[in-house]
Length: 337
Image (cartoon, rainbow, N blue to C red):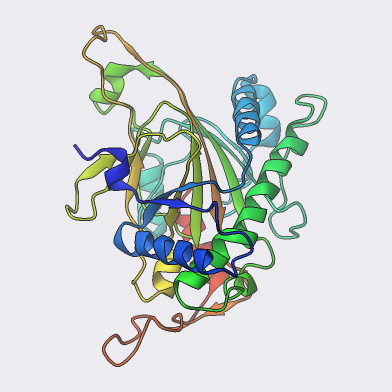
C-alpha cells in the first residue's frame, strides 16, 4: 500500500512570503509539478491558523448536532446550482459527468444516496447566490465564525495560492487574480454520520462516490477519521488512501483548471470511503463519524477563458474552445445535486 507521503507531494509555503523571491518561484514550480503528476498535494505552512481550523471544526460538530427542524430553517433551495444552506442525509448524490435530466433524476432517487449531510456558504456580498443561515436565536455565533474562516481561506487563495500557481506556470504573479476577483467561491461543511461497519462493507451505505471537482481548485480540511481516497497516478481505477496529516491542508485541481491548462494539470478522481474494519473490531463494530470542510474556488462568472499561455503550441494544439466560466460552472453545479 502506498503510504501518504509517497502518494501526495508535500508543498511547503513557509518561504513564499510576497511571491517575489526565487524561493517563491521554486514553491510555485513544485506546486505545478504536483498538479501535473498527481493533481493533489498536501500544503503545509499555509498561514491558515490551526486554532481557527480547530474552531470551525467545533462549530461544524455543533451545527450537525442540532435538531433536524432547526437545521431545516436554513434548507438548501430546490435548484441544484444554488449551493447554499443545509442539505440533509441522503439529499445529495454526487454524479460524475452526467447532464441528462432523466439520468440525473434516476441517480438522485437511487437506492443508496450519499450518506452525509452538508452546509454550504459563500460570499456575503453576492447578489446571485445569497447565503442561507440558521436564525441567530437558534445558533448564535455560527454565522460570524463561519464567515471568518471563509475569509481566511479566501485570503490564502488570493495572496499565496493563485500567485504560486501562476509563478509555477511562468505567468505573471497576478494572472489568476484577474479571473477570481469577484469571490465566486464556496465553503462546504460536511458530516458523515457513524453507522455499523457492516452497512458500509455490504454497500448498503456509502460516503461519496468517485468524482472530480468542477471548479478551479479545492482546499480540503479533514479530521483524523480518514476515508479520503485518490486514484493512483500510475494505476487507473486503483484508489489509494490519503491519511490525514496534522497541520496539512489537502489541495487538488478541478476540471475547470484542467481544461484551462489544455489538460496539462490533472483533475484527479477521488472519493470518500468508510475506513476499513480494524482486526480487533467486533463483528457489530461501528464506523465513527467523519467531519471535513472543503473550500471550492471558482472563476468569475463573467470571464471567458481560453487556453493558458505556455500550455499550447505547434506540438500541443488547443483541445478546447474558449468558454464562459459562468456557463461552465452552472452546468456542473446543476449536475452535482
